[in-house]
Image (cartoon, rainbow, N blue to C red; front, side, top):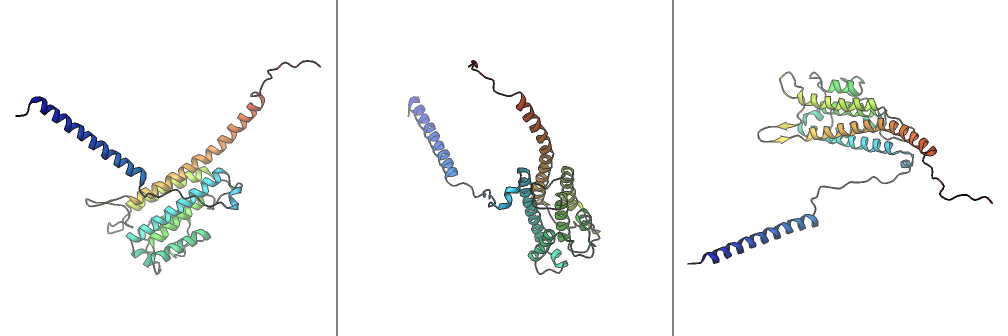
Length: 262
C-alpha cells in the first residue's frame, strides 16, 4: 500500500506535468497566431495621381469616403438582387450585373433613371418612389439610384474633391439621416399582402443575417464623420489663426547674452 508521502509526491508530479502541458499548448497557439495570421484582408492604398496635389486632407477624406460609400451601395445592390432576383427582370435586363452597370453609369453621368414611373425624379424623390408599395418597376435599381443620387447631391454633386470645392456640413448630416430612414423603411415597408417590399436582413430561429444593417451603418458613420470634420475644419482654421497671431507676438525667444557697446 503506497504511503501518504508517495501519494502526495505523485499528485504534485501530475499537477506539474499538467501545467507544463498547458504551457506548451498556449505557446503553440500563440506561435501559430503570430506565424499564420487570419486571412482578413489588408488596407489597399490608392496609387498616387497628379490630382492628389490639389487636394487637402479634408478633400482626400471626402473622396475616399465617397468611394467607399458607393462601393457599399453597390454591394447592397448586389445583395438585394441576390435575395430578390425578380427585380432585375422587371427592368428588362439580361442579368443583375447588367442592371448594376446601368445604375452605376447613370450615377456617374448624373442623369435620371430611365424608369417612366420615376418621371425624372432625383435623390430623395426617387427614394420615395422606390419605397412606395404601388411602385411596380425594378425596386432595387430605383432604391440604389435614389440613395446614390442623394449621396452625391449632398456632396455638392461631386465624387472627387479638390481645394476649391466646399462641402455643406448640414447637407452631409441630413444625408446620414436619410440613409437611416431609407434603411428603416426598407426593413419595415410591406405590400398590400403584408410581404416585405424587398427581402433584406433576416432574423429567424434558423438564421440571423444582419449584413445589410452593418453595411448601412458603415455608410452612416462615414457621412457623419465627414460632416463633423467639415465643421471642425473652419473651427480649426480660426484656432490656428489665433494661435499663430498670439505666438507671433508673445512666444518669441528672449536674449540671454548682454549686448555690449562697441
